[in-house]
Length: 247
Image (cartoon, rainbow, N blue to C red):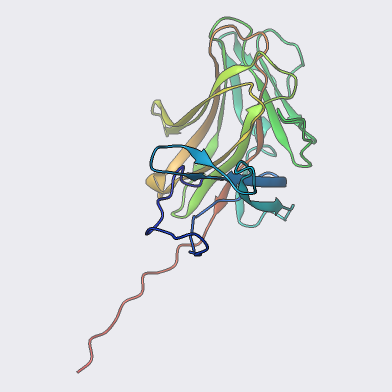
């Protein structure tokens, strides 16, 4: 949940003494139960836990429940077929045909993540052209970015796509310009999915075409990449408080 890997104790702690520690954690975007385990480490780097066996962790446990999407200004699943989809083989239809060797995109209503959990939220299944280092790319219509906009999604390989090894990219294109990389993340099938939360403020005030790209790392035969609920969300930016000097 984005917590620091290590947190030093503020002082020496005697047996039986208690202290308070604080760590900032971020709840994942997808629904489900999550638990972060923690243990102690001594000066020699030895890790130990609680109970008489000194091997049990203590933990923080949370439940992420479904909630209506508030502040969504652009839904990349709903508008998927407004985008131009293509691969190294040329332009692609939207939605595509499952198994098309040229690459394809499908809209899913109940995607299944690598850990086997079914998500009751829309997703894009993006499959690159079935060649070494193949790719699939979508260029969306122009969008006016505001300060406070963020790109959010959950990404990962589709369940049972065990050979999946891809690079997720969020790119952008100014009117008439080149496609430029904004963010990239390498992902292979290992049983995990990842939350994406990108601050789009560097692009604020400009009309931008956002680009979703999946690049195969090696052979593409089992590369089935999920974008779960990709969207642009706007968070209002509060004005900075000012003070007036008084005599």
